[in-house]
Image (cartoon, rainbow, N blue to C red; front, side):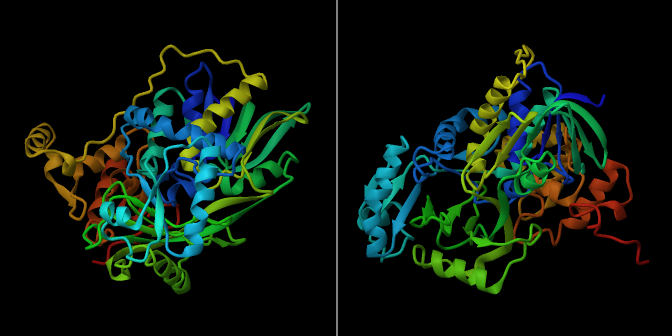
Length: 479
């Protein structure tokens, strides 16, 4: 039971994509993560955009994998039933210096094989995006920039991998990697030891710590904090497209983007730090976001914010995507430098990794029973009145609204808890069905969700956590 062909460390979007790709073959696969749910760190706190790779550094591995991944999403999201929309993006120049840089950006895009960018005049910009600033000098339209639900993408990849035979061990922290005769032999964790022939280090922010266990850390991986505003769905400056700033070497900049669920997302900042746990927001950081995005969408206001939060994305020195096997340590494959574009590149990174494992000696025999399809949870709010009536007749729990802001029913929450890799915390429920993501940020629905979790899991309400152990909401009865 504790012997595997491949152990994948890290259940962010990259690790989950690799697990699903490997599940196409007759292999025993284990996916482990230190967190209580799949989703990693960076995969839970990004801009939720599927990029084209227009502005990637030409000729790099990152450019190839991002550009190659974008066309994959039409089929992938259908297979996994993940919300996805090709909204398109506008790269908006707000001063003469930015405007003069647009031809070079377009040329870089062509070098990357992204040829569908179009120049837009200020008049054309205002026509397709009425709430954009009057002061915009011009811009580029990037039609295949897209929006997605990053939580559901990661969860769906993991669920489909499990349905195809992958084992998952959560709350499992890797303590050491053991070698035998210069080759990976064992993964030692706080949940036990697992024998394996291959290890894939997809640990994101912590990939350097894993690499150090086998003496292969010739780089530094540090966190870059990004602060965000999430706005209410009901704002007077709705957008049809992603509004992008002109990018710099450090960051793609502070954008304004519609989310797949109808909110607006602002940010992120780009703050290099040493603290891998610092997800605090600051007055200065949030003010910086508003100052920057108002240059392009002047109507944006903090008074419409329903949440401010921060996430951490991994940054490598030397920079760049690195996906490597090593002659001195057989059976080890390490990924590092998979930064904010990793969400986009995850399906092509997975294929690249599997190809490298085959070159390193892993025998790949197609599994004829592999099923690429995953059924999502039906949301009452997305149904017609006729569909709602039919669903409630089939499952009366769909008639009980638990989250009023997002119109999430008890039926949806029960499904989220009882699926493969089911939710065991408030945040896990939130990521699967959005209960608590609305205007009141779980102010009304939290007690009901706690009660449903406790009932379905068969544990006391005092053991229900926001996320990790130690974040319990209740301590006992007060009367």
